[in-house]
Image (cartoon, rainbow, N blue to C red; front, side, top):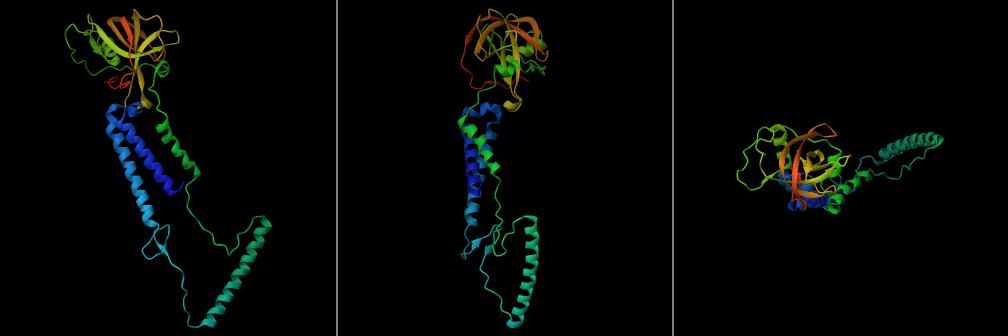
Length: 298
């Protein structure tokens, strides 16, 4: 990979990050609050690519017409050095050359005996620094970002990961009135387990999440939560009872209308607590703008 290819790769990666940050693509990788950092990283990479290209172009030519060397200097032809006593100097050089040739012959003979080829002394050797070819593998994540938009983590991850419900620091007051109360999955689960559903009783609730089934086919309403990025996503689960649809497909997003029930169960993966929700109605909904729930561990 030469310098020009490195510059192109930096620019392409920066442009990809800017594209992800200006669309909803970045939500597949990090939580919504990190959007400014994604945009900043893209801008820094593009500026770095431009600076690298400028420095490389600046170093390829010098004002005096010489050829730029890797360390930024300029190579000039050797004009020779005058010597006052040309005969003596020539004799000394011939003697030194004979001694060097003798030593070279001895080394060549020893190398030939070992079976290793010896480069001709008259052929100049060039030590050009080149990056290893394995560096081209850096293009793979760039192509993945451009060509493949990974889906948000869903039922497979939820079925193989135990619920990550943790006790909240407190429970803010909920809106009053007769209108259905919209809650996040983590909010309902935390209040149902750690507050015994005090503020949820006799209230009509609406909760949105995707469907996940355990090994026995028991349905859960799930939302994945992020600490930072999709790599650390963990699920919070609500078990469903009551008027549950007879056929549920994993990864289907549902808006559940129901009521609180004190019934509980344990997650078959890590024995974590899972509250139940008594379903009144369930209707399919599109995947939300942000499929992850940032408030799951608050």
